[in-house]
Length: 238
Image (cartoon, rainbow, N blue to C red; front, side, top):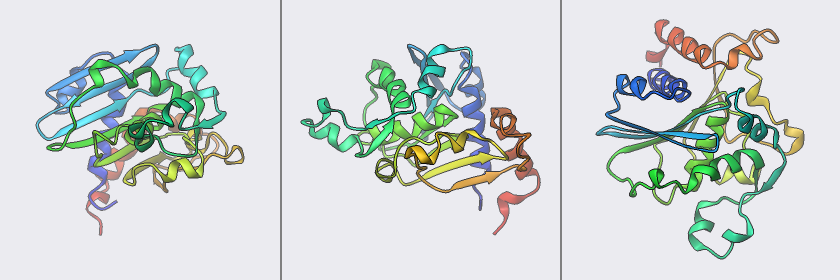
C-alpha cells in the first residue's frame, strides 16, 4: 500500500462517522458542508469541500429492522428491471447481470431524493465509501450514478458481496476493498449462491480466526488496524 494507508485511514474515519446523526465529525475531517440524506432506513452523508465530493453510506445498524431485512434479502435479481430497458440513460447506468435484492432496494430508497440531485461534477475529486452494507451501497451507487460522477475511487470496509460475476465486471474499476483480520462479512453471501467480489481485497490487521470473525467487523477495529499500519511506517514502503 504505497502511500495509500493514510488515505484509507481518513476514509475509515468517514465511514465510522457515517453512523452518527451529527455533522461535527465531518467538519473536523475537513469538510465544510455535510448533509444527511435519510429515507426509510437508508442513509447517505453528502460531504463537500473545495477539492472533494464524498458520498458516505451508512452500513447495517442492528437496531434497525429495515437494515436487517435488507441484509437477509440475498436472492439475486436482475440489475436492470423492465422499466429501465427502454431508457438509454438507465441502460448506461445499470450494469447487466444480477444484484443483491436487499442492497439494491436500500439504494433505491434514496436514489431519487432531491438532496442527492447535484449537478455533474468535473472540478472536484469524487469518492464513494462505506462500511459493511454501506460499502456495498457505495459501490452500487458509483455504478448507477456514473453518468454524473466519475469516481476517483470507491472505498469499502468490511463490505459483503454485491452481485454475480457479470454484474461486478461492469462496475467502476478503481475500488479499494479493505478487509480487517478475520472479519466474516466480506465472505457473505456465499459464493455458492452465485456472488462474487469486484476486486481483490486489501488485507489489514491480524487474522484471529475464529475469535475475530465478528469483532473485526467493527468500524473502530478498522480504524485501529490502519492507525497501527501507519505507526509502523508501512505507508512509505516501496
